[in-house]
Length: 468
Ligand SMILES: *[C@@H]1O[C@H](CO)[C@@H](O)[C@H](O)[C@H]1NC(C)=O
Ligand SMILES: *[C@@H]1O[C@H](CO)[C@@H](O)[C@H](O)[C@H]1NC(C)=O
Ligand SMILES: *[C@@H]1O[C@H](CO)[C@@H](O)[C@H](O)[C@H]1NC(C)=O
Image 1 (cartoon, rainbow, N blue to C red):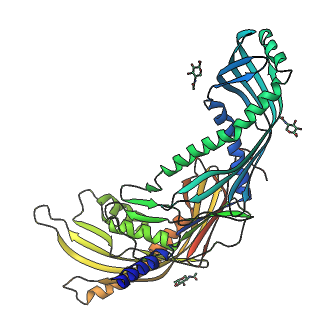
Image 2 (image 1 turned 45 degrees about the horizontal axis):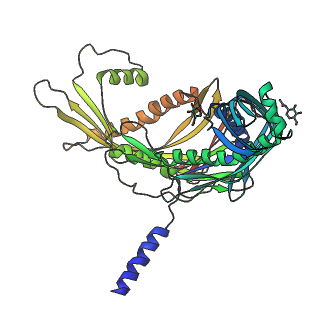
Image 3 (image 1 turned 120 degrees about the vertical axis):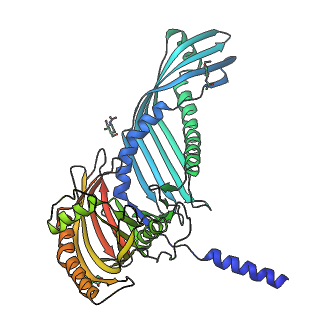
């Protein structure tokens, strides 16, 4: 019994310790962090101003008990002069804010045997610095975790603007009021940052790392391992598997391990393994989306586009054409070569208005197409262009009453695809497919490249204040 138990334990351990390879790899370089810093600085200035600041109250012994309540604390003005984000190797990210200024308004109530007063209190801070190291890791569920690992803060100058009545208080502090405020505020900076980072972490852990792409397919982008922090970049390994929403099963293949080339000139590198694309193909196939019956309009559009015949059918066509994938298309990636294999069925049926439709011809086809694609960006648009090469195309009529004349038809179809179809698609591809650039992460200088088993998109992001 004990033996069986240890055996099961061993098996479980073996299954668990088989590392899941990532489908997606994301690399953020120092250049990318500089961009994040520029965006983050503006965000932080507004964020801190909108933060609710808790009331401060306390007691001091200044020639008798002095109690104070500081309420309605509002940061009116905050200027971050210098800031940086850098990688802390093996740990996370360091945020360094230097030389910042802030003006804080508040109401102050003082209670002392010599004085009871309620006044506005304006405090001007300058030379504020914070050096904070954030640790970024992942939990068992593949969700990033975020925590403040270490924090140091300093406030160089404090200037307090007091009303007359309160000057008595300042005197009681032996003119050390500013020191006192500096110390009190400084002691609160890092704990406040700890509280904030707990909130950010809670937000992260409540986030579902799974998104619906459309009605059929969703993408799982949980982390596979903890992010890796090196001198030059941050590498994040992500699952990157597409699933059919209605039939949530694991793809029939696993990602092949791959590593990004050692580059760090661009801000962002995204490596997409062939398995990611293939899981999308499998998910769509499973959802039954890769099957389509052409409408009369589509048939006439197609004949017009490819054959140059532009007669609009005046009556409904007597036939229907159904095209369906017979298995999920598969993408193979090799250095400078992206090849898609598709296999499908084409069925032509009569469209009887009274009688049930009858299959006239059905054919199976298999094609291997290589694509050479490039990406360019201009005027907030992305243009994907390139060319296709038909490596092979085979069609076979599979109708039961197949006779000799069909072999001519097979040949004619193959010639047609090669001579009309491919040039037609290439003509379209030459001018390129236009996509709207992302609103939040507008790509700049995108470069696309295929390697063994993965493709790589390297790119900069438009920052508010780019440093070149
Ligand atoms: C701070 O004090 C003010 C005035 O007493 C009060 O209205 C407010 O609710 C207090 N805020 C907090 C967060 O306790
Ligand atoms: C930012 O800091 C530099 C160096 O300390 C200083 O010369 C400059 O005046 C500061 N700028 C602002 C806006 O405070
Ligand atoms: C790309 O790979 C496919 C499949 O291996 C091959 O048939 C095709 O010739 C290759 N194309 C180029 C341009 O190397």
